Image (cartoon, rainbow, N blue to C red; front, side, top):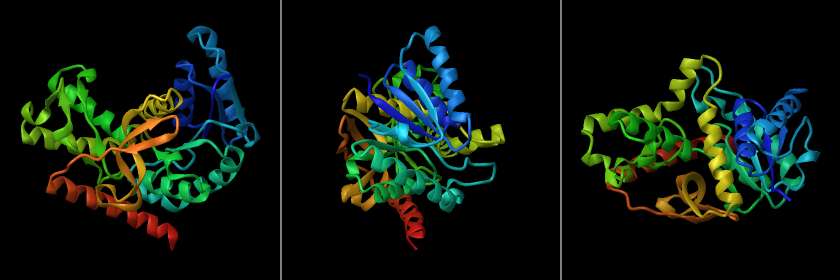
Length: 308
């Protein structure tokens, strides 16, 4: 019997997650959306691609939550998409209302699931999901750092004209303008980029990484990125369902790590079948720690706005 993954929100990100998940034959997928016919149509379309891509996973689309019962993983992508000129934080209150309603439906039906949050502003929505679900913190995780790191790795690979497979990197902090790419820990074939690129070029790449989401929003003019976010979520799904113990940057609940208490912020974690199995702490320079503290403070400010 295959694992079961529910994806809430059948927009571009949710549909991409469903597509990548079944193409890798990781799980059967339930796609849920409030728009009549949308999840059913996309699920059927993906089902009919099965004979061509050679996967046998089942897909079901629904406008209600009963088919989601006993999911192994629930991915929450529901919420308003960013428009040009909007920050992720502009979405705070409306998406909090949407995400809160979703969690109230999925948590009782899948009490043993791991919840992956994609809705923006990411870290604040992950904190809200944890509080509403009352799940253990290791079973609530936000997708952000994998996407941000993928953008960082892409830009480094382009700059140096090397394969993206040679580039390793991670991004810390909140998923937003204060995220903290860490060039010291970005390597190409094991060589730190601080030895391969000038400080000016690294600074430019770091800034482009921070602006990565906005760059795509401005190009598309309606909606935001979805291929790379979908791929990032699928990497998390695979790490969990295959119990890979993979080290990935995710939004996780910190209890003193990196000097932060009681807050979901992006850090490297070990991801396996039980969810977040370890917070991986790396040493930071005073400058890096100050940037991380600033990013965590921006996340806390959003969380406190929701609690008022």
